[in-house]
Amino acid sequence: MSSTTNNRRSFLKFAAAGITSAAIAKPAWAANEEVRVAILGAGWRGGQLADAFSKARGCRLVAFADPDQTLSKEMAAKYSATAHFDLRKVLDDPNIDAVVIATCNHWHCLATIWALQAGKDVYVEKPLSHTQWEGRQVVNAAAKSDRIVQIGTQQRSDPMQAEVKRFLHEEQALGKIQYVQANRLGPRESVGKRTSPLEIPSTIDYDLWVGPAADQPIYRDKLHYDWHWDFNTGSGEMGNWGVHILDDVRNVAYQDKVTTPSRIVAAGGRVAWNDAADSPNVHFALFETDSFPTLIALSNLPSGPGQKGGWKVRAGKPIDGPGSGYMIVCEGGYYLGQRQQGRAVDLAGKTIREFKGGNIVPLHVQNFIDAVQSRDAGSLHAPVEMGHHSTGWCNLANIGFRAGAAYDREQISAASALAAWPLLIDEMERQLAPFDVSPSQLVSSPVLSHDAKTEQFVGEHAALGNSFLRRTYRSKYTVPPT
Image 1 (tube, rainbow, N blue to C red):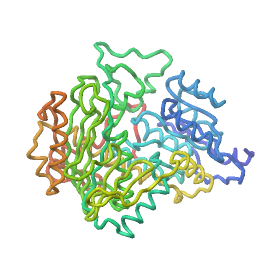
Image 2 (cartoon, one colour):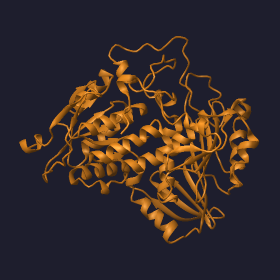
Image 3 (cartoon, one colour):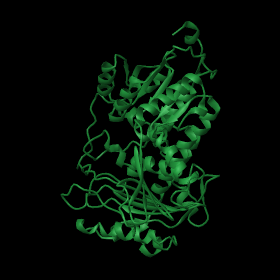
Image 4 (cartoon, one colour):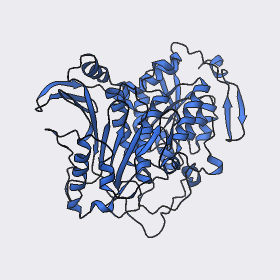
């Protein structure tokens, strides 16, 4: 890069966070100038994103950071980049233009805010936030920073989605939408349950790994990846895969006209495994909006003990919905949406049109790099506030589970007049039987009313719901109000 580019930022010390803060003047990108990118988080997802960014036009990978020094060094060596274990070293480097945040979920918001304060553009993995409050702080920080911030819901870059929306909303080929059924029915395995805390290798800076989360002993078998199923660091399956599916629903069915639901009721449990995780492996919820409702069913259990297939949720329809995807139920038929493919069927289940998607990860990464070079945030396919709203559906569903008490089938069934809702409850309960699990082992929430404008729960049970909207941070790693 030219010396002009190297001098385009003036750095000041940001004492409270212990990192540098940058002037936020827009850089003047030359036509042939590469965006120098660092990846924060060198685990499984970090490796996937490294591959995509290394192949993107106008991009050069220059650094990796991960509290696990082994992972950071291995990834950096693969791409002839610099290895760090502390992400603040990356943020302090004026020779890095943008960062890709592929850390554990609990780090996403703080890392993004720190990066924005350091003058970096940001590609941050989903889910955006661990709580709605901290997600809002990221949206505010991005608005003040004049930086480019893309969320890693890569299906937003699939050209197929625009075609599907024309089919459903402009052509109205299936008639009026009645409701949406979303599913993530993918088997997983237990994370185990130790009798003594997991010993952390000396090559990992554990204080930095814990970061904004609570410093708690870990009783599962593995540190990496299985943090997803611990609410201290992850968001369960709802925030892991549910966010992709619900983001599709917001985009394709609601056309982004609905930010977050107005009412929610949820139920679920972590059953059959007796392991050290606390997020549900069976989770179902009803989201009410001012237009039409959405139901979601998640299960990490197979069809039966020792089986390989996942659960099925038909709920009175003539066909099964996708195991990982959603069904838009219309007056004249159904649209079955999945990643990179979809099909429309009539009321008898006969396919009337098919849709084929593109290579979404390279497309999404390139969209970010192009926006960084053009400085046109409006060209982003998944801007930060869009990611905040889609993540919100998952955060609210998780609050429904975490606020749950003794399972009350009658109460949750009565939450909606939609006939499909009690049918879905029936199917979720029925599929517990092969595991000798009774529905009484689940928990269910009261009906929670949510104000999308204030991002607060209101009415009866508001105090219960609002108690989960913001977490307590460790002093060195506090997400600042913005």
